[in-house]
Length: 153
Image (tube, rainbow, N blue to C red; front, side, top):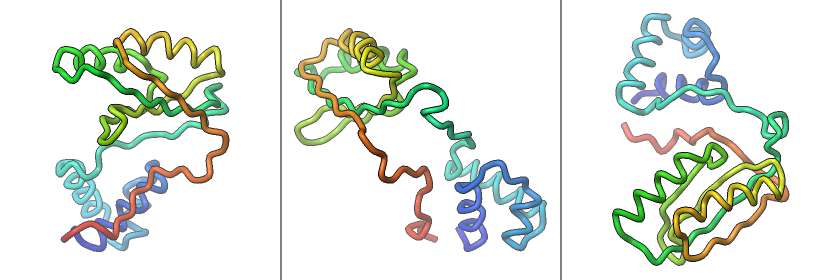
């Protein structure tokens, strides 16, 4: 990965709608060279997807909740059941299996507290031991842009 690849990635992280022509111009390479680099970044799995980021408030999902989960069941059957439950919940944005005191951490968005309660009722179908939730009061920093100075090569 060279300086031009990093420049392409940086620009695309800022605005994925930029045309290949604009990207090529800003990076200082030809359109065809830029297109080949983008194709290679996709083939290598570095560029995973191009998405539009929506405003939570504008789509009536203003409340972000982090849900901490502990379970006493650490087996494949329970894990598969849990996976099926969370896959069926579009309000659940991210799920992580954790080390330490927590088993899983979920990031979700909801309309309001009754909306959270409905999500909670769906989640507990996975036979959970302990569920604790924290609600975001203020977003102080939020980004999807990864720093590129750590790329080796």
